[in-house]
Image (cartoon, rainbow, N blue to C red; front, top):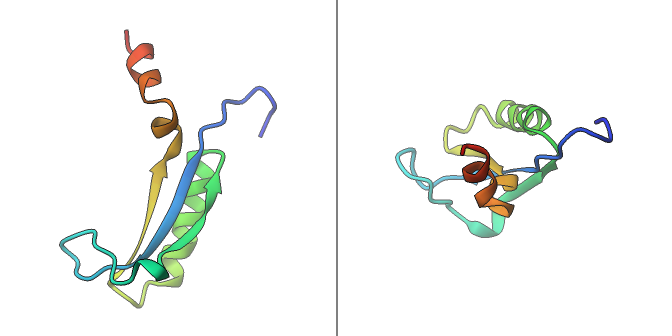
Length: 81
């Protein structure tokens, strides 16, 4: 990543859900933090790799969280004005 590129942190995590209709983890102690990534593209690549590794278990789900939006929630509102 170039020094002048904006760092937009993303978290990839996941685990086994209790059912396919809700996002309720079967065991919070087994939720896996895949990592924090500097861009959506790198987070997506990590998410995709984990999703492919667990394709045989329909209850396994991985998610991408836009941490940069949580860290500065007013930034999107400011930039849209």
